[in-house]
Amino acid sequence: MRVNVTINGESRQADDVWEGESLLYVLRERLGLPGSKNACEQGECGSCTVYLDDVPVCSCLVAAGQVEGREVRTVEGLADGDELDRVQQSFVDAGAVQCGFCTPGLVVAAHDLLNRVENPADEEIREALAGNLCRCTGYEKILDAVRLAATRGVST
Image 1 (cartoon, rainbow, N blue to C red):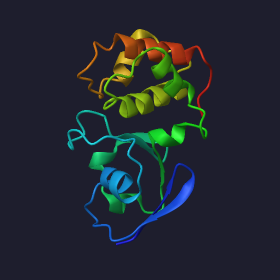
Image 2 (tube, rainbow, N blue to C red):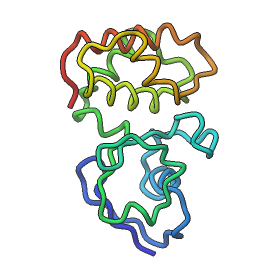
Image 3 (cartoon, rainbow, N blue to C red):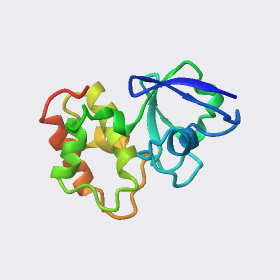
Image 4 (tube, one colour):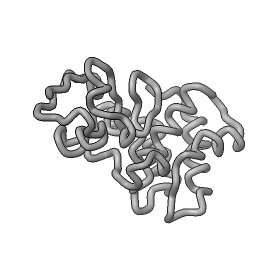
């Protein structure tokens, strides 16, 4: 099957896609967008989180056939060319990036939170990031990064 989808504002097409193939697989293997990570394949870790029609989803749980004609925004699509989004830059500046495996999902989840809540309390940050697992940190630098991003204005 052929899948036509808008990814990061650009019309894209993937050919020879099996209907049950995951959106994550299509993004990484067919369309060359490796930002979203493949960790648990069960929607439990959050590493593969992307926006689907402006709603954060675990792309490992979305069948490729479900995205026909829809809009996907990946962690790569948050940046404006070479300029990182405020959330991405805050993760770098706060030292919240370690191995980087969980980072794309955390960035998308934090981006979504800050688009909904201008200055979230720590409890709101923790709740928004609850579906994302990180095995390298104690989460404090991740919380620092979200707090820092909140002080830097509006994301796109």
